[in-house]
Length: 58
Image 1 (tube, rainbow, N blue to C red):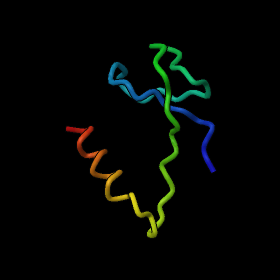
Image 2: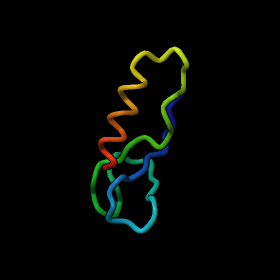
Image 3: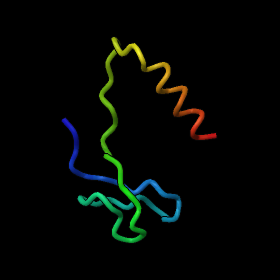
């Protein structure tokens, strides 16, 4: 089940901006789903997804 609450992921804000719309009310950027992906030990591509997330952070 996905959450209806969305969050703006830009670094322009001092703190997270939560909203129900597809765009941020302050900066106009697109928002993302605030709920984390469900965990499954049978996830075959989880290793690749986590590696991609680490690369995006750095």
